[in-house]
Image (tube, rainbow, N blue to C red; front, side):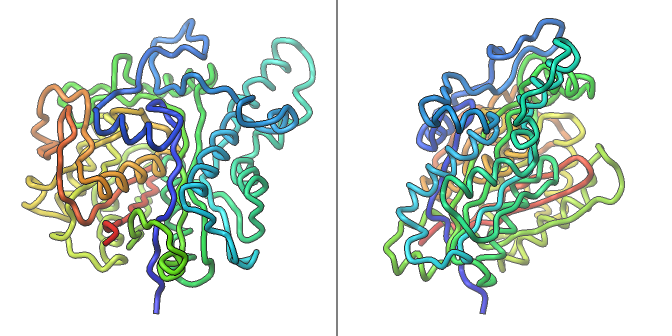
Length: 402
């Protein structure tokens, strides 16, 4: 028999704040963290806004040796993992080393890469000697495992903007199958460098003035940085040790469009949603809230609406579907973890997170997107969507802890 899986700890760091509590407060208040980019030179860029983390000082959390080995991405990952574990209350106590693991989204150490290329091409000098370990896609999870002393499975999953959702879902399946007693899972991303911002601008998908998911006047996504992590553990073990259970993870669905590198497919996205519901034993009518991928590009929002209509039919009109990226921007490979954390908060604290920036209904996005203000709601079951470039889809299903 499959194990039930509890979420017992949460950590978050984003444009909304440096802690999970600050993230929660901003979601409830509808406080948008998107604004002018201050930490990166935006000269020559057309898009000068982002979901930036302000006031972060690595020296407050790490010693000089650690800072020399860690890119900003890894620093964020370690901090949210620490917060999640602290909130869970000694989740590794008494666990055999091989039965505690860490799974995080793969991501590049963008600051290390950018600094290295500047040395090579501008200063005509050698890059920093630790550029490779700072930039490698598994650096974040490596530092998490080192910092927490985890000796079980530790690895990264790469699926672009679905990476964190795939990571959490994989950890969930490993705990449910009895392979692990406890896992820390999530994602971290800090893409705000001149090179990456120019590269995203070249794609012509960035908004110059704000993130407005599902609004008819939306004109693109906003790039953000951030991280989030959850502690997943066997339900019975969590109950036995007296842990506070924040939510139950019930299902995980995956699909691949197998069609296009950038254009999403509604049928494939709907299949991922349906598989998550099936995996969690949920009928479509049981779902009370959807945390949408909701990037605020014209095509993605319409495609996601069409996918949800395939699954939920006429009920979609009465089903709240909001995009919390409208508050903290699109944090790429970390997005699935931040969106998941937002969904857990909605279940636990009884409210619907808002879609900010909504100005005008789009007939092709005919949903209740919880526009411009959070809303009290007694919700029992929810899903969180993550759809990535390359047609890689991941959907997580959750139930309120009872």
